[in-house]
Length: 398
Image (cartoon, rainbow, N blue to C red; front, side, top):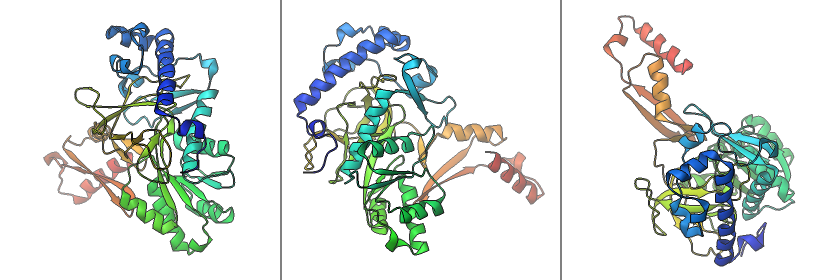
């Protein structure tokens, strides 16, 4: 049995979880129908009203929401509460044009902080720990989420943000950080830098909470060995709330989804049909507890599998695998969403042909991206230097 931040919720019976979800879901459907014209129109298109929704089995009657909907409704079109009730926004990187902006009330932030506090406790965190938050701060959700969770837990929090490795290591050693929160690739880089500087014996880390990009079990073991820690996965999306939608416990056998705040489905990405338990498909989330920005049946494009078996840690929340891929062509490079269409636009704007190959690799645990472009006859010149100048000019502008 493990430690829990909110034991009465994290170990609740399936009946209790279903009760919470049903009440929250029915309320959310009613709220968005009455307060969000965009939702109401989508529901009317499907011929559904809140009266048709009686319990969780009616979830599949409702329309899906996609990132395209969020862009179309930008900036205020999906808000379910007045602007005066909102206290913060976060946003995606806006890699395909319009950004996705998510709004938070004070209660939304409290809920998010609680989810991240649960993740910290599941990783062995207590109020006596020193939590070094090395995710980016600002519009990105990573820094704010773990910072809030650490505050709620009562741990000393080092809001480092990302980068400035010398300062990261200085504070880590001087203040005795015990839990590190950042992307796995940055954790690997920090481990390398710590060993290069010969200060490994001054590091007191015991755990790390790493997310925002894909990483393998091999990478987990490498980081654990290099830093002498246990490395935990965390999952979230800006649209749903940020990190803390799901988190790993000490068993490291899938991430527990905070089901008292989120409902998850797995669908066939082609047909949209809900798949039976244990099947691999696209994860769809309903953030029914969110006040300012509740999303009903949001298609994440992440591929995963759910496991409803009770975990030996004692938690009863359903577990999800690490994302096993994407149902679209999005790439995640160093925690940033990158779409091939975005790269194609840059190439075309700089006079290149649209025949290209994107090569994404991981070198020394750091993501790399290389774009190989087919040269056209017009681009060749007797002067080799001229081709080189074009290449550099476009590379740096892009």
